[in-house]
Image 1 (cartoon, rainbow, N blue to C red):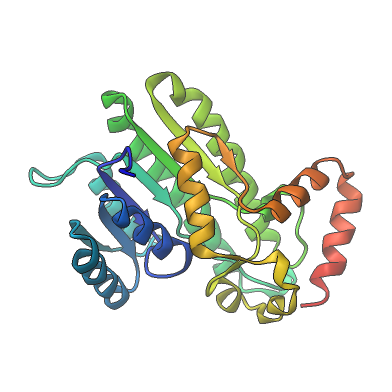
Image 2 (cartoon, rainbow, N blue to C red; image 1 turned 90 degrees about the vertical axis):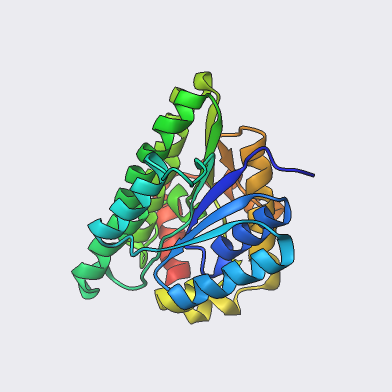
Length: 265
């Protein structure tokens, strides 16, 4: 089935959920702008999508931890060139986490998480919304996390950034919906990607199989929610049950429970 969007920009597209978004969108005939730091991976993905799906794919190498990288993507969103199609779907997928006691982690890394997970996402959302609201059409999909639904000892900064993403996305969704633009927050749980290795908690893979989802499953459910104009999506039955239970649990209990779980990794 054809997608309601013509051109999508996906950040963090070189691997994981970002690459899954790109493949699913290309399979539905959507032209793409794919961004990440790894040019080699981006070019390989672009060739794959062009050859398999016949779509246009623009590679935009950018480091969203740096102001220059954010500005580069902002420019593509807000002021496309004369031969570039406007973006009517923005997928803010780029992000990273860390693992450990906050005071023992390099503060530069924690600041970097805030830059990528929050500040870059806010700026790119702002850049995309102007043209979308003016045209009366478009969607933004911000990748948050179930980690933002409670305090997360050993992932303090990451959880806090994702709590921001969820609240911010829902607020802007309410502001923009009258103009025909939706903003959807995606709250995935444990997903089989490179995220755990990069964040430094490989032992999470010892968790039971039923808590895990594949990246393409997550991306598919997220795109369906964005297409339906929903403000939030929690993919997977197990994740929905957990989020519902978390919502009814006192903060002190949630904090201690997550702290005990974090001690395993």
